[in-house]
Image 1 (cartoon, rainbow, N blue to C red):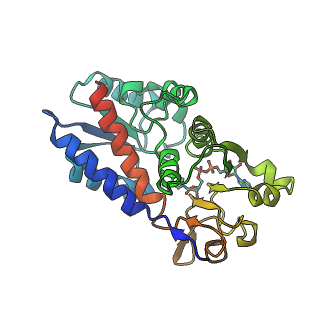
Image 2: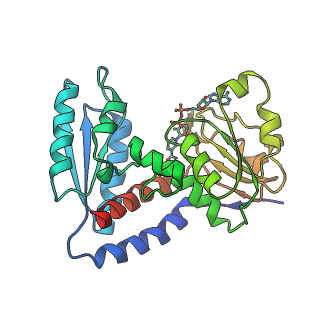
Image 3: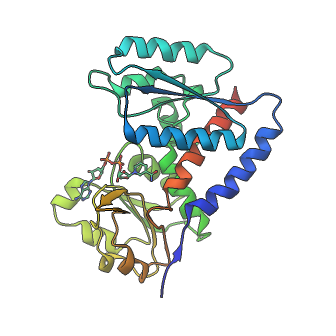
Length: 280
Ligand code: NAD
């Protein structure tokens, strides 16, 4: 058996189509403002992708570039002025931030109503309560991919490997809210040597670690849904955290890397902006 590929691009295309129609029906256009502090090649790639996607949907995209020597207080002042600006629907601060700037404090200074990434503690609290309007983009992307299988999730065994604030933890809450039996593994699970036994019982497996080939193909439960969030450069290639070829022979659905979670993440960002705009 060879798994069906969960291509993020195709799912993103249908969500974007719906967003585009919705935006076209608005009298005013939503606006996303991105703040970049200092130069960073990986955030430059994200900014280009965000701008392209936003503009294709009819969302205005503004970029504020601040010098690498920007002080935390200056950045907070900048964010507070965007919080008050009625023409701005969503704010995203590109990470990583230069040393000396506390990224948690920065995220907290964004108004929860304009929190495009869904990372403000107030919005994360709503994810926990199951009544969130915006949620962290990568966790939402993984969740959308799982839902796209149209499998009945109720009571299923999910194992998430990776407990970061942007992926593992919020995704665990999204799955729990759908009555999925959810286990979250992390570095200590690996160090204790029990990662394979957890992975082997996963009917839904999500891996967000950042270590190529961490999850062996033979650990995949036959018929599992496998969502590989990892992005690793190996020589010239980009690969995930799961050994793709052997896993593909056991899983029922699997995301390719690249082309799985990545293309959906930026779409989820745009969905958050549209939601913020509608609620404003
Ligand atoms: P992170 O570094 O914040 O967290 C890594 C997690 O992996 C931690 O929970 C850690 O405890 C766990 N871990 C580390 N070694 C382990 C081991 N041996 N066994 C079990 N768990 C282990 O990572 P992150 O920011 O969530 O990113 C994870 C990966 O996902 C990275 O490769 C990143 O590039 C990728 N990512 C992709 C997207 C996308 O849109 N496709 C978005 C965000 C992150």
